[in-house]
Every structure is written in C-alpha cells, then in structure tokens.
Image 1: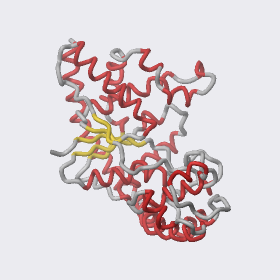
Image 2 (image 1 turned 60 degrees about the horizontal axis):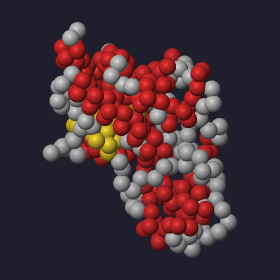
Image 3 (image 1 turned 180 degrees about the vertical axis):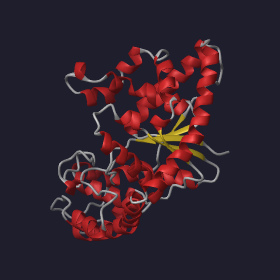
Image 4 (image 1 turned 90 degrees about the horizontal axis):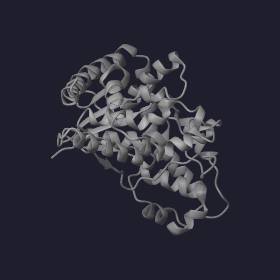
Length: 333
C-alpha cells in the first residue's frame, strides 16, 4: 500500500545542492512511486518568521515551484501549492496551539539555536513554528513525512499534538499519527569552503555552495576551488572524522551517484583530490546543469507556474478546509 506524504520547503530563493540532495531528490523518487500520494507545499507562512522583502518572497515562491518541476516532480500526479493560499493552515495552527503545551515547545532545540542568546527578542512565530508545522501535516492525514535530523523533533511534537487532540476529544484516529521518512545513505552537505559548516545560502561566499541555477562552468570552477587537505584520499571511513573537507566531497559524490560511502572510498582510496574533483565535477554537471537550464526557462513562464499553484491550491484547499470543518464539529464551534 502506498504512503500519503506531506513535505514543505521554505521559499528562501537560491536553492542549492544541500537542498537538492537533502530533500528535492528524495521528493522526486517519492513522486515517481505510483503507489504514493504526495503533497509538496511551499511554506511561505513559515518563511515570514524571518523578515522578508515582499517582492522577493513572491519571486522565491515561483522559483521554488520551478525547482520542483525542473527536478522532475510531476504537478499532475502530486499536489504543489503555497501554504498561505489555504487559510485552514493558519486556523488549524491556532486550534492546535491550544492543544500544544509550552513545556513541549520549550524543549525545541531549533528555536534555541535560531533565537540565539537574546530569545526575548525572537518572534512568537519562530517559537510556535512547530505548531504550524503540525497543522500542515495533520490537515492532510499524512502517513509519512520526509525529515532531516533538524526536523525530527518537530515531527515528534506533531505526533504528541495529534495524540493529545484525539485523547482530549475522545476521537480515536481523527488525526493520523505520522511516521518519519528518513533517507537511507544520506549525509548532510557541508560548505565547499569549510567542511565543518552546513552548506547555506546565507554564507557570504558564493564559492561555498553549488546553486541549482549554476551553469556548467560555474560548477566546475567551484569544485576546482573547493577546500581540501594535503593528504591522499583515505582508505577507511573512520579516517574521515578528522578530514571534514574530504568527507564532504566524498559524500556529495556518493549521494549523486546513489552509492554508499564505503564503495566511494574504495574507488578513490590513495588517489589525489584532483581525480575526485574531476569525477565530482562531471557528475554534478550531468545532474545539476539540466535542472539549472530548466529552472531558468520556467522562471520566464510566470503564468505557467501560477497555474500550477492555482491548481494545487484548489486541491489542497478542498482537503484542508474539510478537515478544519470536522475539527469545528469536534470542538463544539
């Protein structure tokens, strides 16, 4: 039996290799499985926990959709929509925030990391982010949610909220308890300039990341300039712990090649970085350049992207508003 999958991507613009290998590549595989029902949401409500430029946000929403389509997600098979066009998300988030407990939210490590030392100045939205994420998932009766390490805690609180709602109102199985979908053989993609830091669009140097809009020459140049050390490539996985840059490049190669790290190490053991970089550039150009070309083409077709969002909105709105209506009946509104 197929899975009912919900996943969201923030429209931050300039999606990079880390986003592709960490999420989008997996979405394409889930979408391609005929058994699965997939809902991919551009989570623009989540995006505004950080101040956004309105014009840029609109463009970033379209760019995220273009990236989905260019990577191979089929909008006829899966629902693609942006969160803010479905009012049920905001309404369900309020209802569920009356179910969630402050103690649960206080344990969220991602809030502590993002709020930093002066958490009194952080927004309420950043604090209650996991409740909105729970609403996103529970409105669609999702059975599975693809999550990385940083979102596992948020899925746990989603499960707690669903369970508490079901228990409080004595409605067994009204909210389905979603399961995490953890990618096998997946590694965090790190900066090309510092193997101890996650690849990020906020890092100042563009040479630190491969953007999904980079062309062939840019990709080759960035890999050529990627930080390395002076030793030959190792023969054992254990040796990589002290060599973050070697580990990162080998992991990127493995992920793109759908291979495990052990096999990749066997291929390149004792060789120089130049040989790994040459092979890595080749596979990156092969996988990323067609996506880059297609993203640029789609971004010039705004009406087409808006049509996909409108069709997705209609389908998502129908499902989510029906679920909220049932929530009203259960609560006594």
